[in-house]
Length: 498
Image (cartoon, one colour):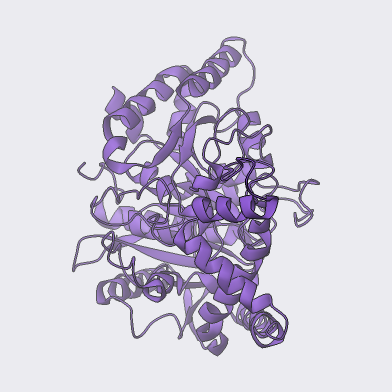
C-alpha cells in the first residue's frame, strides 16, 4: 500500500484524501517511511520534521471529518528547499554559518503552503546560499541523483529534485537565480518552473542575488507543478518586488495543454560546442513532436545570449557580496572567536572564515571587486548594459513567437566531483537557463526522454514572456502528454533503483 501511495501524483493524492479513500496521515506516514528507507543514500533532506508533518496531516483529516472544504492540495506532502524561513524548525541555507538557526517567523511562501494545508515534510539540501549547479557546495555534503547516486542531482536545489525523483515527496519547492529549479529538474527527469520574477514572494527567502532570485514549484507532472504554482504565487505587500497582478490561469492551462497554432522559437545560440549529442538529439525530437502537434517552428538569432554567462557572473556575485554582509557573527547564526580577546571586527572575520565555504567566498570576492571604486563601470555597470540587451532581444523574439524552447542543460548529470576543481566548467551547466533570469521571464523544464549515451534524463526548457506563465503549462502539458503516449507510461513511472 505504501509503495502505491508514494507513486501517486499530487493531484491524485489530493483527490483520494478529499474523497476519504486515503487519510492525510496515511499519505504522510508513507512518505516519511520512504524517507527513512532511502534518504541515507540519497541525502535529499537536511531536516525532517516528522512530528510537525504528522500534526499538519491530522489537522487536514480533522477538517475533512468536520465537512470543511479542502484546498486542491490539502494533505499532499512537500519537500521545502532550506532557503525559506520556517518558524520553529532549522533554516541553514546549506551553510555552516546558519547551522542550528531556528527562525522566529515563516516566509510568505511557507505561510501560503500551510494555509493551503500542504504538509511540509522537511527542508532539503542545497548548494550553500544557492551558489552552485550540483549541490556539492552544501556544507552538509552532496546529494545523489536517484538515477545514479554517483552523479549530481543538479543545483542549487538538488535536494528538492532528488526528493521528487526518489519518491520521497510528490511536490517540492526550489529557487532559481540562474537555473537552480530548471537545471535540477532536467537532470532528474522531473518538472521545475521558474515563475516570472516577482510572481512569488521573496519575503523570508534568504537572499543570494535579489534582482535574480525567484522561488517556484517542482513536481513530477506539469499539472502538479501548476497546482503548486497557484498556491504559492500572488502579490505580497511584504516584498517590494512582488507583482501586484492576478496569477495567470496556470491550472486551467495545464488541464488544456495544446501547441496547435502556436509559434515556437528555437534560438540559434542554444546549441553547438559543449552540448552533448544525446541532449541535442532528444531536443530535436521534441521540436519535431511539437511541429507534429500543430506548432509553427521559428528560428531565432539572439547574439546577446552568448554574453549572458559573463554578465550573470558579475551581477550575481556583486549582489551576493552585498546581501551576505549581514552574516557578521554578531546578530544570529554562527559566532567564532567571541572569547573576550577579539574585537567585533575580528569576530566577524573569524566567523566568516569558519562559516562560509569556498564557493561563497569566491563569489563574495568577485562581487566586491566588481563593485569597487574604479571598477564599477567596467564590470558591474557593463554587465547591467548586457542585461538590458538580453531583455530587449527577448522582447523582440516574443514579437515573433509565443514561446521559446531549448535544451535545459547542455549535458546530462555529471559525476560527483567531476567539476569540483573547475568552476568555469560548473558554471557552464547554466548556459541555457541564465538568460531568462537576467530578463525576468518565466521558464519551465520538463523531461523529454533519456540520452542514448548514458540513459540519463534530458530536460526541455520552455520560456514565456513575463506574466505569461500559463503558456509554459499549456505547451508543457501538451508535450508531456505526447511523450506519455509515445512511451505508454510516464518517464519515471517507477522509482530509479536505489
